[in-house]
Amino acid sequence: MVGTVLVLGVLVGGAVVADGVARDRTEERLASELRRQIPGLDTEPDVAIGGVPFLTQLIGGELDTVRVTAPSAVLEGLPLHDVDVHLAGVSTDQPTTAREATMSALARTEDLSEVLDLGADLRVEGEHLVTSFEVLTATVDVVLAPAAAGREIAVDVVELRALGGSVDPDDVPGLGGRFDALTVPVDQLPEGLELTRLTVVEEGVRIEAEGSDVVLPTQ
Image 1 (cartoon, rainbow, N blue to C red):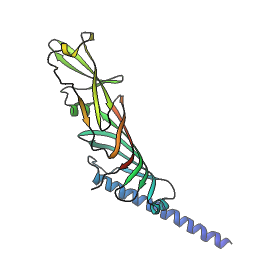
Image 2 (image 1 turned 90 degrees about the horizontal axis):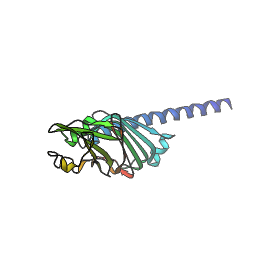
Image 3 (image 1 turned 30 degrees about the vertical axis):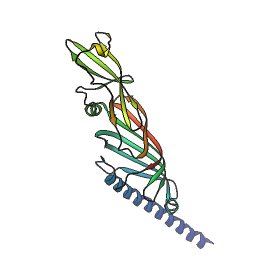
Image 4 (image 1 turned 45 degrees about the vertical axis):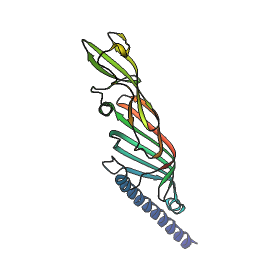
């Protein structure tokens, strides 16, 4: 009986080790593939596969959860930071799909200003972004509100401020249509993933996206 228990212990221990090794190797392979397949990734992301045991998930053709994190990436020319992607129900077939997916990332004010081609810096004021221009002898503050619009970031003008009060855009010469239909396209998001929420934070704008039956990029 003692011998049987010892043998079972060795077998279970060996299975656990094999399961962990297989998980580690798959995470490394996924990180390498994502680095190659996703535009804008300068380094290999960190990949963590959840759920136990791993080998039964692999045999079953679907991974319970996969988390992908990266310090930075570039989406449609917009640098993103602190990228965090959570995937659930990830198929091991091609094309790889996820039943559910969420993503969060940070777009910094200086990067948004450049992509929007404002010609002036952005700053954060409460729940809004603000940029300023000199018009004649007055400083005009343009108050902007970013919003999630499916496959693009929409930026709306909510207020113009000058000389201590609000002003009508038509009364400000020189601004013209500079702030009409400001958008940042994000068509490089995987198919099935769309922006759901944008939150202005101290460093810029926190971007959130989610979707179902998301098709992961392949080459």
